[in-house]
Every structure is written in C-alpha cells, then in structure tokens.
Image 1 (cartoon, rainbow, N blue to C red):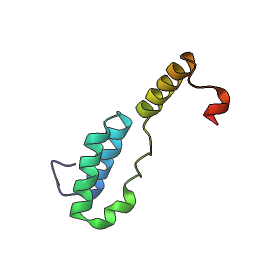
Image 2: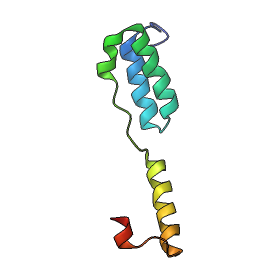
Image 3: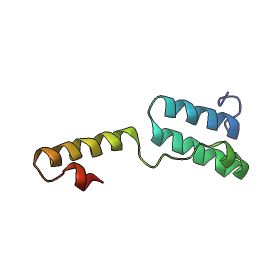
Length: 79
C-alpha cells in the first residue's frame, strides 16, 4: 500500500503497529512521526509509548536480583 501511496498516514500507522508487533519500536516511531507530519490528526491513531519496555523491566529485575544476592536489598527496602 505504501508503494501505491507513500503519503498515507493510515498505512504508515499500520506499518508502525506491525513493527511494534515485531519488537522494532525505533522503526515504528519513525513511521508514526512520518504519519503525524503528513496529518497531525493521525496522532490519535498512534499508541502511547510504554513507560518501560520489557527489556527495561528485565534489566531492572536482574539488577534487583543482584542487589538482593549481595545483601543490599531486602524485602523491606524494596517497599
């Protein structure tokens, strides 16, 4: 569809959603930004960015485990 109409905000958003499903948020954000540049109303079609990605959460959990194993993090300090 983008080959036929490369300036279609709806198609750019759809491709961006596909990129998200494949785990490629950077490419998705580029498509979302391009869609919004073409038509600012396309912003309503773009999903919000999550505060933390799954990778970020995994890294935080790994760091917390290391801190707990080192004795620097206890259940009461986590609260």
